[in-house]
Length: 372
Image 1 (cartoon, helix red, strand yellow):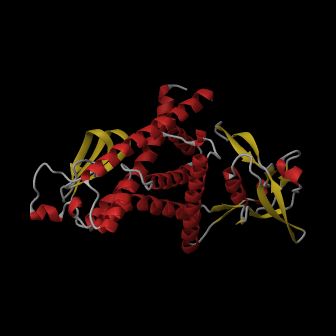
Image 2 (cartoon, helix red, strand yellow; image 1 turned 120 degrees about the vertical axis):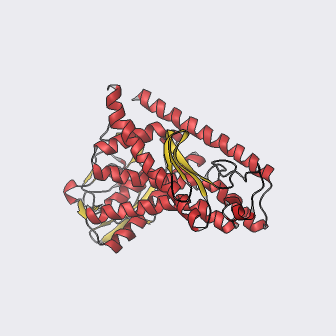
Image 3 (cartoon, helix red, strand yellow; image 1 turned 120 degrees about the horizontal axis):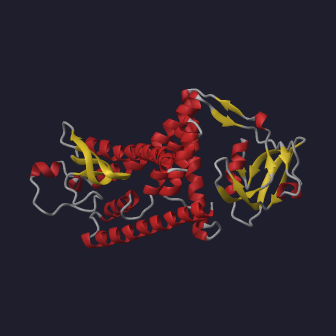
């Protein structure tokens, strides 16, 4: 694959998709800051040297910067783009204090910071709802169309025609629920699968088998499998009205969040390997694949990445929105902010953690590319 092909099929879709979700995130900070009377100095897509930009009527500099791997909003009164503290280079006038982020009440600062991740979730819900209304939600009855011979499901006694009603006590309404729940099962741990057969419920204990799976784009990954399949003819796209679509979009977004948190928890506990963690290289790869597989898949990927960005930013690590929210929560409880020294140490630790994570996930990406 030549360099122009890579740029067109992978890099360009990645930059477009990333720009969309970053813009949504930063616009959340921006608009809630404006509502709370905070002056916004800069709204930047990308980091580093400004490529081009303009001023709006309220004096905000909108810019596109050299490194398109993120973005930021700089509020008036901040010492830097990370809102790491007040600018102490000069005394502010009373009029300037009224529009300074650092001089707003803690509740206002909390809402401004929370707005970034919140807008990511809201955007994803609206995108999912739009797809469910216009194209439909893939829906497949949780009925087994086939049970692979010699598979864990076959050895446990599952049969074609069984209707799965629960896994580990969690309700199963669609076959897609099975496809979501089984990969989250820790390696070597048995699952309780409840099926409906001839009008009677039966529960089986099944230990999924770790298997190398390859998707339609050639990506391989070890994942737990039961060895069951569904008839493709059974799948249908169900279009929904606005109210139902929004409701299902909220549920779908919640499912993405809980599945992500479950996987992260399993990595922390050692029940799941960290090879599933991906960074910019893998996101770029998936962006290109989504773009090549059609407009709907690309749109859905934008929504999924928006959820991921919102969730990541909520982790209570200084340098991320969640770290700021943690500091503001402590400030609200104490009645005064933590000392500048404590906050500075917190931001330094947060920076080290974030950079370490970025190096780790990028290394993961490179290893996966080398291994094919």
